[in-house]
Structure formats: structure tokens, C-alpha cells
Length: 202
Length: 205
Image 1 (cartoon, helix red, strand yellow):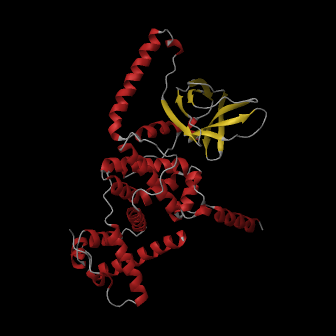
Image 2 (image 1 turned 90 degrees about the horizontal axis):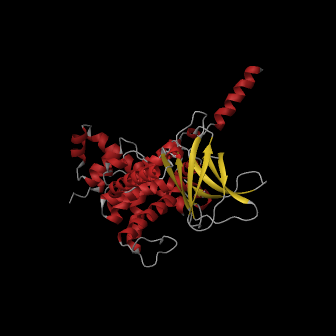
Image 3 (image 1 turned 90 degrees about the vertical axis):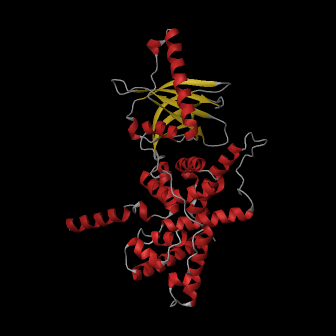
């Protein structure tokens, strides 16, 4: 009887144990960060540091300023994660808005002194096409961060280093068949991830 | 300019029409997004994680733009030297407050207020002397006061109450009889006397 109670208690404890931060979606991570969870912050940082830096670099055109804006973005996330409301949508668009505001602040500093600083950051950082392109890159770069470590380099080598599948096989010293299988799998995973984000945002 | 990858070389020719369209879209988005830039060394690890209030001060310092770092260091050194000489000359050195680190605070709402907590050396009885410098908090009425709390998640530890208001900066001495490592942030709230609980947060780290 006591054993049965113990087992039940253990099971209850297991059920209430929070999932590892790596398994949380972006919104759950933000909620944990709002409660001061540093592990959640680390996971979120690793997921988003490249997309944030890429966005900042695209807008500011200077690595030093982009680095500053990236640091400010994450400091802001740490401070204001409590203002994220899951009911209003997933975490990625909220994080995009925080990053965009940090970058807008940097842009304003470059053209100081501002004649009339608005109370709220402008929702657009530039012409609509540029804003759309930035959002697109953000989603793709964010989705790339989710790929397994053995798949991501294949896409990077194929798309941005200009290597053929045979050259990638030589470069990574793996069979050509493996390169083809992993590349297709990576693209499928990327498509899933992008669809999930689109669905969540819709 | 690197060669654009051939879609069919990447995915083969044996996909269903639907799957091919899905992968084609991911392929097009990858091309449109462009490469992910290489991260600078300074961003490889998160530097804004704040494990303890002690590190809060250090992290706030790390977040300064690098180009301003040298100027900030020089300014800090000049201020420290000026404060030391000024304090000594004025004969107040025996009451001196030796700050180990400082933590900036900012407003949580539209109030144009800010503060800085300077944390002194732990004394032999377990007290951390604090010096709080506040700007922009209005004078409170009806017996309400401000209160500084050390926080971690939903836990709070009171570090003392104070009044503010009027022009200029208000400086108050407070004490934290706690191990500061147990907290990871600070807040200033508005407290109504004789009303239990933590009031609305006006400033936070």
C-alpha cells in the first residue's frame, strides 16, 4: 500500500516537473524568462542571436553597431519578457518587434539630434518591401536554428557557399547519398518550421 | 557571387507534386533570405544573463556600446578620483560609503524616473549598506511611501522604505540584511502604509 502511494507520488512529481527549456516553444521560453529562468534565457539566446544579428546588420550595415543592437535586444528581452502575452500570438513575432525597436533606436542615434522623437517606435523600419524582406529573413534564419547540427551545414554550403552536392560530400567527407538524404530532410524540416510559424501567426 | 543551387539536384525527382511545391517554397525563401552572417566573438555567449545582483552591475556595464566603453571608463575613473578627493577634503572620509558595484534601475511605465543602487561592503553582522539615488519619482500623498525590494521571480525581500519628490535627485541610505545572491533583481514599489502586500512596481532593474 505504502509502495503504491510512493509510486503515485513519484508519478505526480514527474507530471509536474517542467519540461527542459530546449523542448519549450518560443512563447513558453519567454514566460519562463519572465520568472527569472536563466536556462530558458540561454536557450532563447541561442535560437535567436543569429536572426537578431542578421536583422541588425541588414538594417544598420555596420557590424559594431549591429552587435550593440543585438546586445540591447537581449537585455530588453530579459527585462521585459513579462510583457509578452501568449494570448496575442507566438513568441517569434514579439521577439522580432523587440529586435526591430532596438535597431530603430540605433538608427535614431545615428541621425541625432531628432527633431521630434515619437513616443512609440515606428512599426516599420523602412519601406514596406524592406520590412517584409526583413521579416522573411528573420523567419528563415530562425527556422535554420532549429535544424539538427548534422543538417544545417549542408544547406549553408549548398545555398551560400555555392558548393554542388558532390563538392559538399568531399568537403564534409561523407557519402554523396547521405548528403542528398540530409539535404532533402533539412529542406522538409525547414518547410515544416516555416509553415508552423505562418500558421501560428495567422 | 556564388552559384545558385539547382533545386532538382538538391531534392531529386521522385517527390509528390505537393511535397515538391512545399520544398520549392522553402528553397525560394532560403534564397531570398540570404546567408546568416557570422557572429562576432562578443555574441557567441549570452552576456546579459544575470545570475546575481552582483553581476547585474557588471552586466549593465558590459551592455555599454564598445565605442563608449573607453569614454565611460575614463569618466568613471575621473568621477571616482573626484569623489575620493572631494570626500577626503571635506572631512567626511570616516563616514565614507565604498560602493562595490552599482545597479541601474529604469521606469516600468510612462513615469520619467530612474534610479541607481550602489551596494557597499558586507559588514560583520551580515548587512549590505545600500545607497539609492532616485530621480523623477513624484511626492506621494496620504501616507504612501516608496519601498525597495530585492527580488527573484515572485519572491521579494524588503530593503527599506523612503520618501521622494521634488526637483533633483534624492539620495537615501538603506540596508539589506540578506545574502544578495538569493535575489536576481530589484524593484521600487509604491506602498500604502498599513496595507499589506507589495504595491505597484515603479522602477525595476
